[in-house]
Length: 109
Length: 167
Image (cartoon, rainbow over all chains, first blue to last red; front, side, top):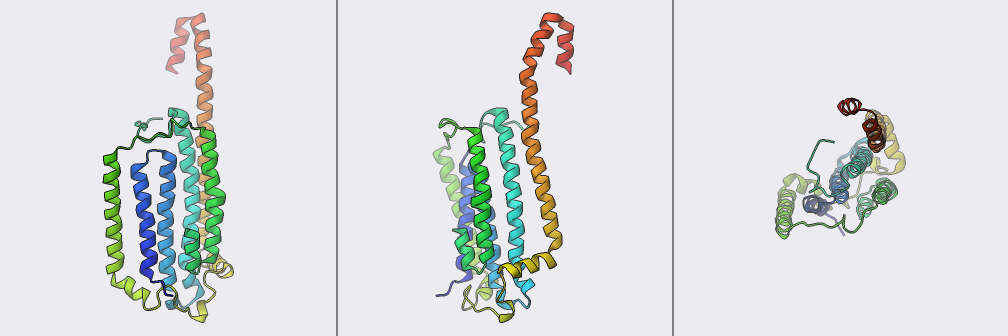
């Protein structure tokens, strides 16, 4: 059974589109953050898929691993982003007593 | 699901890390915040209009169609995929790619600087997160102490109160 590169890329496109839909439609900040994570994962998946497709052309292991190391670092950045996003969410909730993005209309703290 | 896809793509280490980071760290973080917020069903009520859902759905469908046509029509992707696609045989020289030892060697020999920068970024994120939660807590404590002070000021003299209000 062969798996074309297009299939993997279409899968990550689908995940990305679902993430965008979630960000646009949902109003709960927690769900919006989750959908952001979803979009980030979709892009990671595409990077790894292309890295796998480039594998037959790689001369050294370092070249072959470049995509995966990149994704590893993006994962760490995603974890940091989630921590900061959630702490902002906590601060916003303490200030306005809501997690609804539609009700938060001031940038002023 | 993403983790399974990583396994398919010859990235066993990333598959494990994905589960560890997302199930172990990020989901726990989300659950902690949910617990701290203590939301009621009323807070979670969403009034997204039907029209908005339809428009967003159409927009995302269009986005997906755009990305999909870009992927399907791209000659470069076709060329990369080749005959065997993602199940093609790999040269013996890079057969180890994606396994823990190979990744560690690449990460600590070629990409040490990004790795160190990432650790610095995480440090900043930790400090930022603690500051965000701590500073707000202190402000709230001051605010709750203020009415008491204001009441004292009222009892003492009016000018003191106005001075307090200015600061």
